[in-house]
Length: 90
Image 1 (cartoon, helix red, strand yellow):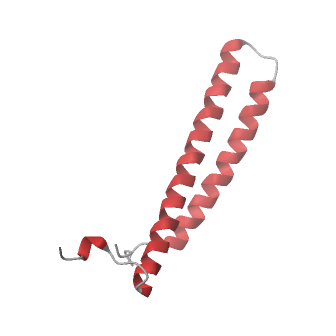
Image 2 (cartoon, rainbow, N blue to C red):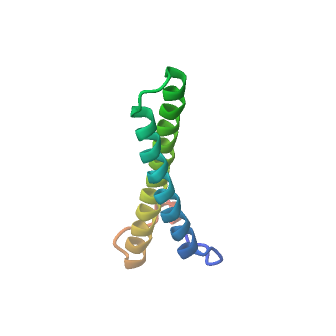
């Protein structure tokens, strides 16, 4: 489970942070618009945008958590604390 050295992980991390910031702004604005006294159809559109933004943010957090977990496992494997079970002969 080696990391691909051709991938610019700093750039990816920067993009993820920018996306999280944009999503936070979208969720905040959408929530304010949803709370305003407006027609039901307009509130429904803003509500959908809030839900979509939250779902996207949750997926980003999930991917980040999985990447962190994979990095921790690789460090433990490198230290010999755990063994890569895929490469163990039975």
